[in-house]
Image 1 (cartoon, rainbow, N blue to C red):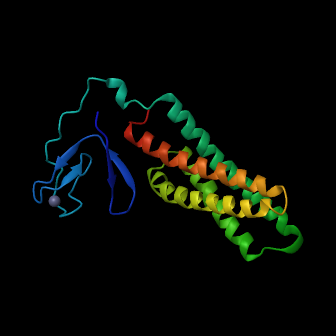
Image 2 (image 1 turned 135 degrees about the vertical axis):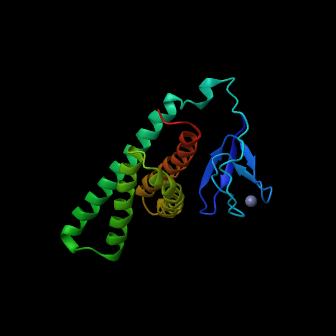
Image 3 (image 1 turned 45 degrees about the horizontal axis):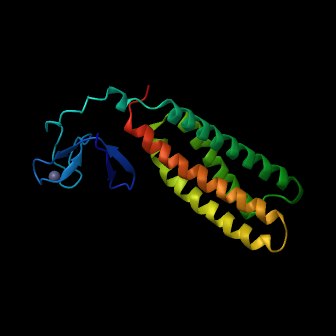
Length: 186
Ligand SMILES: [Zn+2]
């Protein structure tokens, strides 16, 4: 079975199992295209190549992928809620600073995304790719910051570990969204 990675105009990566040709401009398009992304021609009538059904299991989401998907979604939700809780608890003493508000927004979005992923909302799955990308960047920042702090005190190491975890979780989520996109939900 062939899988094609596709870059939409929106920048989101989706995967097609087959490729069709645009009747107008002859561009190669993923088989789920209803219209050509280059010349907007209607491609809904284009005959799709026959699916390779020699391995019917190929289109079923492996159980571990689904389990991991739900686990990471729950983790995003929990870490968002924990983040909100910690920020609010910390602000009891000296009020909300700019950094606190940024953290609240980021954690709030994280928690909402967790809920959306658990409900399998297609739009959330799309924006999650972008959020995960920023999550990885933020994780890398924690790693760099932690590495610098390790020379001063031992908690720097914890920050590094937190950063690595963050990069792994978000990277894994991007992988899982791609994996679960390839298959029909069951
Ligand atoms: Zn075209």
